[in-house]
Amino acid sequence: ANRKAIPEFDGAGVLADGTGIPLYSNVGNGKAALTAAENRAQGIGLFRTEFAFLNREEEPSVEEQKVEYKAVFDAFPGQHVVVRTLDAGADKPLPFLTDASEPNPALGVRGYRTDWTTPGVLKRQLEAISAAAKESSADVWVMAPMISTAPEAKDFAVMLDEVGLDVHGVMVETPSAAVTAEAILQEVDFVSMGTNDLTQYTMAADRLLGALAELNNPWQPAVLEMIRLTVEGAQRAEKSTGREKTVSVCGEAAADPALAVVLVGMGVKALSMNTRSLPAVAAVLKSVTLEQAQQIASKALGARSAEETKDVARAELPILDDLG
Ligand code: PEP
Ligand code: MG
Image (cartoon, rainbow, N blue to C red; front, side, top):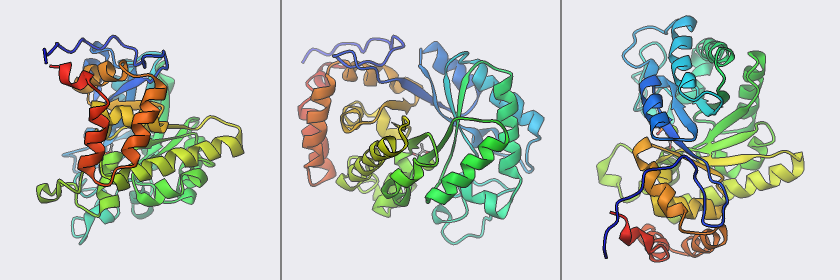
């Protein structure tokens, strides 16, 4: 086929029938946020705040943190910015927070759990986020990583209320969070699916091991099933609470154009990815209606291997052959 250049992202993720699917960037600092804004990301769907802390022997002060956070918020005035609280542990150790001697760091005290062993750090981080949010016009949403239960989501929501941050969310990146999404979404307003960790924990395959790459594949039917359970849980929570409960995806899965179509067809409302993936994902989403995306998703959900799932979806998306 004649390969066409992928058009630049025009700043509006939209399906062929006009359904809006906001496309956001994943960033770790203010500089990356400026690049995202230049490339017309519609906001930040994942601000990995631990990057502001890496290589630090001690916890940065609230004032120092505020400056880091504000730099990201100020790149998106009036727009959506989802801040994730510290996700230290396993692949991202922090000397003042994590225990390097844990036998299984991926299953250890990481993410939200560090608040149990080192109380105060999360509270101070939330104070800094709140202070930065007050000084900027960004629409700041805050979520916690590595949540496993509804009571954890509830405790986190209480902490956010205490500092005046009013849009509460958590990541769904453990199978326990996916299967209890309804209960979790009775406690918080939104969830963002971290498919990198969700894949690792669902498949019981360390995401850092190249030897397990076949298992560590978000096209695995078991991973799609986790996403389906989460979306359905959110739909039930919307009914029982009468409030909107958004499910978005911020793991690498969102950056795969064919998988993005499947996710949208399953009921995911927004996608966040590395900035350079925005144009291809936008172009492929634009080629399908919501109904077509739903049909592609239901075909993919019937497949029995990661390879088959991917082939089934890609076969329905001829545009993939044209994009250079
Ligand atoms: C994820 O787990 O999918 C995610 C987005 O978070 P991180 O990659 O930072 O663990
Ligand atoms: Mg993660």
